[in-house]
Amino acid sequence: MDSLVASHALETGAVKDILVEGVLDHKVITRIKSQCSCSAPPNIVRVDQDLELPSNFLQQNGCANDNRGLVVAVVRHIKKKAGSASRILGIIDRDFDDFIEPRPIHPDGILRTDFANLEMYFNSREVIENICLFGFGVSPMTDAFYNSFLKVLLRIYCIRLAKKKNSVFVSLELDQYRGFLRIELSRLLFDENRFFPSWLSGKVQPQVLQEFPGKVDEVMASIKSVSDARYSIHGHDFTALLSWLCAEMGGAQIYRNQAAIPGLLASTGFRDDFIERHELFRSIGAFIRN
Image 1: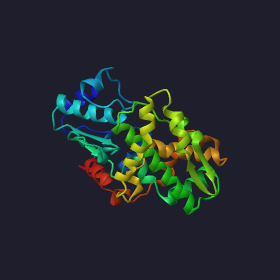
Image 2: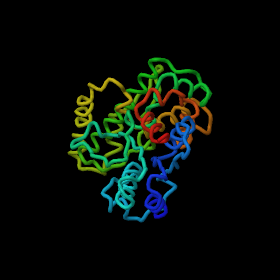
Image 3: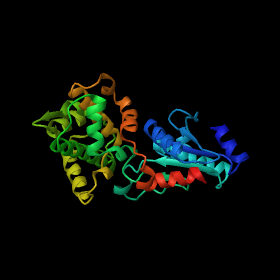
Image 4: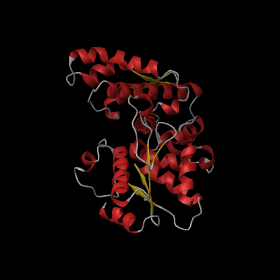
């Protein structure tokens, strides 16, 4: 971290860095970088593995304890220490920003995804079908199945958002909801009635458990006007459900591990026209070239 600050302080304007949250971000921005000709290409830094930070770094910079918070904290720290002219760019997921109040204010040098997260640039029927065929080695999905896949992901997003809005500090991972997913009549189903007690019993007050499903319904109603599912699906759940589908359908062993899914998305779903089609990638391309 000290060397990163020093490079920007000593060579203001000469050094360019792009900070990203994780593996998919790194792969995608590397592809964007390869499409942009420039004399001094930027370094692409993964905050989850490329930086050594003090244990109290996030707290000192007032940021959330996750990779998104790390990107914001590092950009803020470098701008403060090395000057506002530092050529550093942080890429973060939009996450829940559009649905919480007050809406977060991010520092200069931060770009958010056009959709809820970077994974959503790969959320299309075509990409998912290619993943099933060429990645998992299983039969293509039907329209009904893809729509049910999106419906389950939207519901889990609403659970996460309701959790955030109502300060329910209980983690939510694939291992906790995989047992409540099933495929029936070519549709993906999620058994919420059994899930909520299993997930929350003994971790929250009985009244919270009783009221929480209604809170999820309220969130669901509040985001009904969002017509594009890519604004209301959590990237972690997207990759988790793809790995679950691979296992459930008897697909390739490697992709039953969620950690392998981002690489598959980047190799299967990246399109050369991403820069032309999406504001985020146009802005990144401009930063790389200038």
